[in-house]
Length: 282
Picture 1 (cartoon, rainbow, N blue to C red):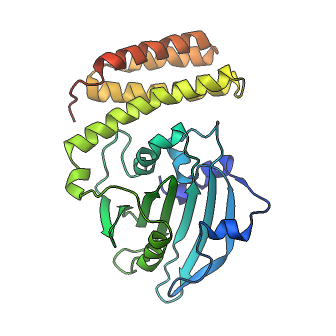
Picture 2 (picture 1 turned 120 degrees about the vertical axis):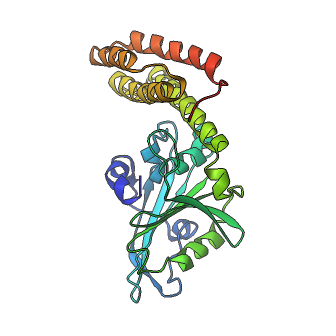
Picture 3 (picture 1 turned 90 degrees about the horizontal axis):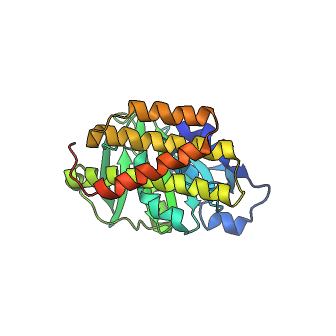
């Protein structure tokens, strides 16, 4: 998902701060013009996981901070939007690269044909090109996302902005080639990581219930959502039909049967321990 497509989702998570110190903002955003790109006077900041909210980043046990700003080039009519999120460095952040990368893959973990990697001044960044360009990278526990919408053939890329943010927040992504990105090994690793992550998300939600920090209905809904994705992947890559299982856990959800949902989660986790290392067919 692209930044613009995530606005509605982010607004439900991102609580805009009434006051953020200028020094704090400048730690993350460039508040001056960048070459021919004029900085907007409108900035926003607030608690929330930023673009990775669309990947179901688990945010309930910590508070990430997101900063946003726009620029505009009067000559080229290119207006990049920049979002920088400082994640807090707890266990949820182990999935950051996976979650950043997820927006450029299809619903079964395969990289889109428009998804590529690029090296800029020794930095590795992720790039998608559909109706514009979308740049993403990690700088430690920070997620930097830059996007612009427009014609790729008639409007130049806002590379001045990208490069300026790479200076401010150097990429910590390992060097990767397009061949490596599209390799069977990369796809297989990502798919299995997503199955791992979905079961992990279920455990994180049930822990919130145990700590009395979440409502039962929210925990059951989010857990079943992740279990459904796990079952879809298992169906596609391991040949275990998902329809009956999905109907069963949907029934548990409809009747608020937490015991049934937890039992199925344990069953899937036990199955995964036995089958995780088996080969899959792409």
